Length: 139
Image (cartoon, rainbow, N blue to C red; front, side, top):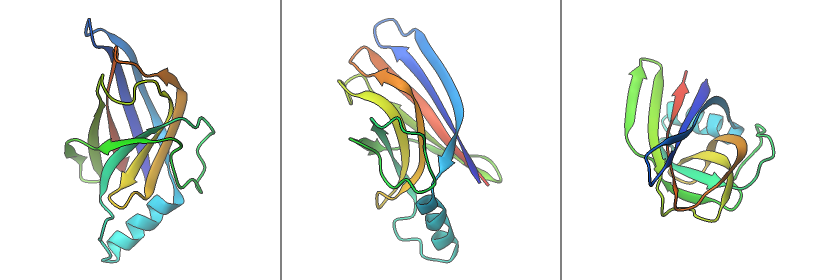
């Protein structure tokens, strides 16, 4: 099981694409536990429904359990690009998380369990920037 994190950064005023980024992410231990519980029939709150944007740039580890200083919101559209993958769309609008130096991203279960984590260079979020992306999990 692995994840692919994709993100595009746009200038709100011109619509110009400022960055186009794609990379693998780490599915953490609690995420793996959520999947095993789901497969065993314990489905309560196991669905992936949220994304968090945080400020910790420490490299992800399997034992990570939280996003630092998170701004959390619901994921967008869910699709199934293949028989073995699920894809979640997300956005961070111009009026969201302003003033935050975003260095980490987290995919969360409905009960706020951290499923996957990704870090990258800081995005100094302000009202001129809109982020649009997806997070795909493949088995």
